[in-house]
Image 1: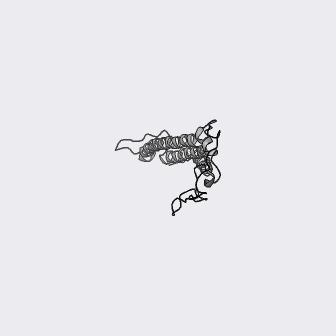
Image 2: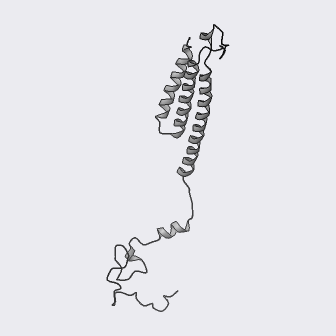
Image 3: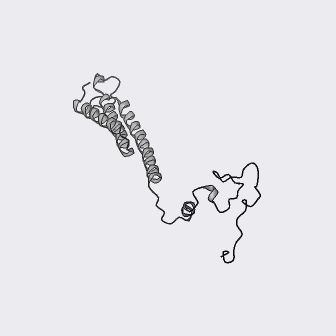
Amino acid sequence: MEANLFLIIASGVLIAAGVYLMLDRAMTRMLLGVILIGNGANLLLLQSGGQAGAPPIIGRESMAADQTADPLAQAMILTAIVISMAMVSFILALLYRQYRYRTDDVIEHDAEDQAIAARPATPSAAPDADASDDPETGRLRSGGDAFGPRSFEEPLKEGDDD
């Protein structure tokens, strides 16, 4: 069997470029690397199948058995093409998901965000806090409600109830 040197060098270059692209962090370059490695492997399988143009099968009594091409390599290449196409579609789905969830969603006027931003810095400064609340967390203390002049809000004066 005679190997075509150009196809072997081309498959080596494709695999080397694919490995280089696979080492990058960008998903699109990883996808291109997977495609190039698959194509380089397919070229190597093509070279292992025998001479180009030779018939895959010659009759039983033929004396030219060493000139036949191996049909198994062609079947393996077709299978590898289908598998690589499925892998590329899966990686494209991952790319789309990454694009959808990594891009910024800009909402100009969100009422919930504005309400959270308007909260006081400490829980004890909240309008519903009384002296029995813990000043750091704003939760009730284990002792229960504290009674006395400091535990209630100041009474409203006239004109303050608007």
